[in-house]
Length: 125
Image (cartoon, rainbow, N blue to C red; front, side, top):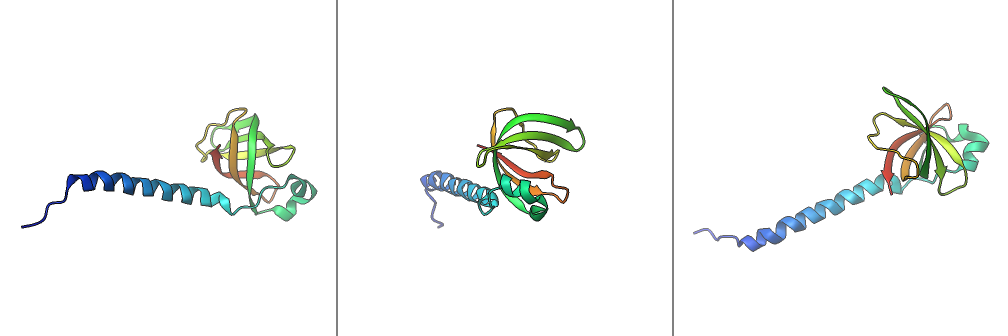
């Protein structure tokens, strides 16, 4: 006769596996920005062409929305938290996030060939 498994075993196993999955998800999510260099406004202002096609971590606070196009995205002005200064950033429509004045974000940005700062990922903190 097959041995029955105690229901208490499942009561402990399910939350344990769920907790481990949440921790793994959080580690993978944070790892996407953990290895990035912090965006340097002084380096960008002195020679943005040297930074073109590179990806950086930008910690910022939303200041204002300059414009929006329904099919492409919007342009925001952000205040840098790791440096002093403000920069415009382009947020593509694919970034499904609300951006309101005063909110703080960690963003993965790419410096495009034309010098524009493109947001690839945004996480509120």
